[in-house]
Image 1 (cartoon, rainbow, N blue to C red):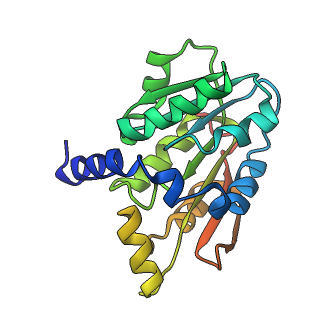
Image 2: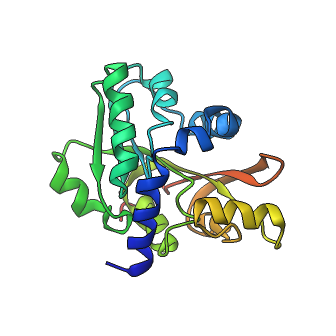
Image 3: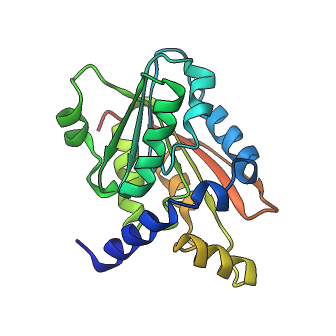
Length: 217
């Protein structure tokens, strides 16, 4: 495993103990609510959340799914996953499957190995992860491949292109890069692209792309 990845896992295992306090629900609420609205989830859908962190998105998903369908939460930090599992237990949610996995390994073969062939990914949310993943372009490519034709990939993350004290602080806290052209890359890969850059005083964006209905690869 890459040394940077090992270091990130170690950091987030520790950070998980204070994550929900340091990154409270209200701080990302507007961006998160908007991002999950863009997924256009309906009863019975399957949604992949990568990375799922401490499971802060789960209650937002349930607003649309109401206990139906399937929520797949993936993260590589055991500490973060333990917090997510606790939320599932406390809320008696039965439609959530949480899996520890490297984001670069999430592809069609991975889905086939973990679920039966009837599982089709209707929507994917990548929030606050692509700014930290070393192979972020590969992960976006994989996510688009996973989606059923016409499915939506929504990305919520930081984008502060010019060096600022705020950007340096966010990078220090999240151990990611805040100047990556993430939504610009999605725009080049998906159709019906949209982006909203108004969140958290312009530092957080929500980008939506749809997998081409005629592209079955």
